[in-house]
Length: 140
Length: 140
Length: 140
Length: 140
Image 1 (spheres, rainbow over the protein chains, first blue to last red):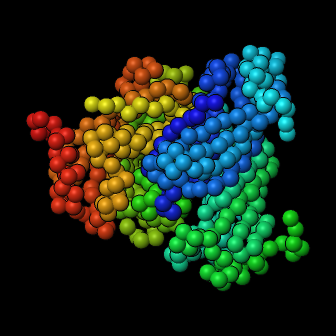
Image 2 (image 1 turned 90 degrees about the vertical axis):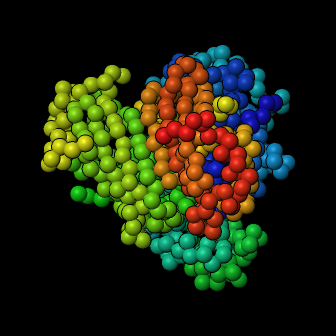
Image 3 (image 1 turned 90 degrees about the horizontal axis):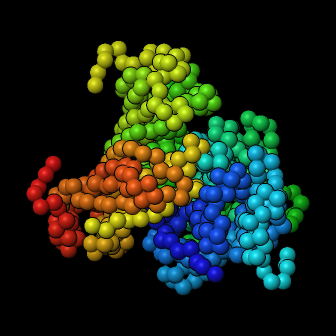
């Protein structure tokens, strides 16, 4: 389970002296795209094939603040995947302090020409790959 | 119940042609600060008085995409307030299309000198104002 | 000469306690689109008509820091317009402190189907409007 | 001369389908901090020692658009350094297309307790390091 690693940038801090909470949503996206890439799914190619995957929901729990120049490692796992709906779970680990700084969830659907599609039909290869990432025992 | 109104900016769009979902978290903050201002709480003065209010959690449901130049109205209500924990609920209304585009929740605590404080003791005036914004019948 | 007015948001601050300098480039875009709107040019309609106007250069002089919740007024003037190249000048006035906080310039070209076009041919109405905004005596 | 390398993120694109121009200013900051780090200057420690280095000016020439997932390498060189004023030059190379996508300049001063200081007096070690980075023949 690869970790997406990146530094917390100065331009991401706010006047409270910590990384502004909105940036976590951007980091989730970066980690998601790197995770998909790692399992052989190019988000760019998916879009070029006419399928986009908008975010339909997010939630983030902020456990510990992150500071400028901290190194953060984010792991992504598939929480749920039905062919139509994808749910990913994120764990943010602060490698500088060795703490879990955040946990988060994102939900996605798949659109082609602006209409909801099943990946099973639209992109069977991507569908199989996502299925293979499901937890051994179906949960949730 | 005042609405915080703002346009969706070009720099907030992404290559899917819609407002990028991370911006909603920034808009929630703008609406929150405007809401507090409207009920007589200056977030700036609160910070100058030594109290900061970090975000401990957020969740957003994205119902309809928002496009460049759409006018969005955001209303904020107090969902829960205990003196130590504040929970706010947001409704995003797209004034251009007359649709509810999103609903969201944010959770907050209060810190003074890096330690959790009760607003009742730290800033009694702010505490009373927030209490007065609670729904008539306690819920949740 | 209308002024585009907006508050400096919390999420735009950095850990130096001031508005992060990258945000000025976003504010320039907001002011530019509002300015064009004010003279009858809808940037959205221009794009729908197949013409985009990428930024080919920017420069910003930061004279005074801007703080959270400051109210900023930005005026835009046409510095140069040739039909192919547009150059705009910006003055940032901090209405909270009554100081000029920044001056800036942006340069633009016009593209249709990825190729540079002359607005005179592509969108004659927009061309005439921009010509009418030129300073009385040609300069620069 | 080390290159700061990073991918262009999805959340940095705009509806024109390219990386929004405001992000280049953030990338300059990331490259600047990495550059300083590479020559032994920790910007974080500098701030902890009470010296901040605000940006007093920037200019960017956008030569070629950058697209989602492109890999960008940014090199930073000292253009000018007087002890009081620092000017850095940036070259953005798109490693995906092997093109120079942008060139840029940033100007900085140094503040301690809100007042302009000479680094020679405030942080002599940092001063010596920056001097050693000057081009062999004084230019500009």
